[in-house]
Length: 198
Image (tube, rainbow, N blue to C red; front, side, top):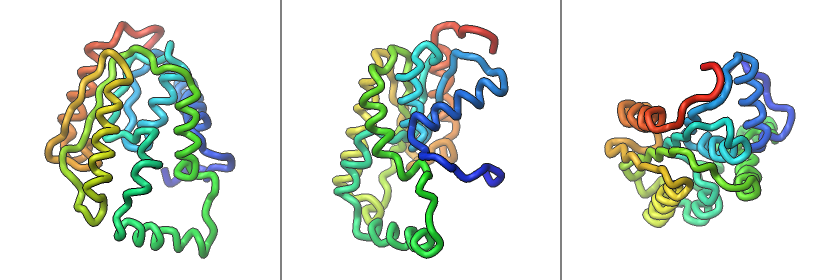
């Protein structure tokens, strides 16, 4: 958000989950919650559910990051992706970068997930984009790792379902919002009754 303050402390998963819980309390929205996490937000939903299982009714992971994605995919970046990353890094090198941004702590967040205890046995929907990115952006090997990690997210709970957005890449909420809405409604419909005021 344009009006948000820049972070002044490391934005690890625990920090972000803590900020989200503060926000929910500030607007008096009480548990239990259906968490929806896209991309990197999937890591935070994963961590939230492990840290506060009693507050979670279900989780929807939309083209969500897997804790193993960064390490596995980093070794399979395409040459163009490496060049683009160097270009993106130029402004930060010249003007200084905010070392507290969440993208700087993805590895730490993955470790927090590994140490946070088991994922609760709540309904989970995994929305995966069916379109492969061009190979100059993601190699075929990286795509296979990504798809394997998406399938692994289905092992989080005994109550999981995958939704494949066939016409979408990384942003199915934009290109096929009906698929994402269907996934969310499937969780709302299968989750146990809410606790507290809605």
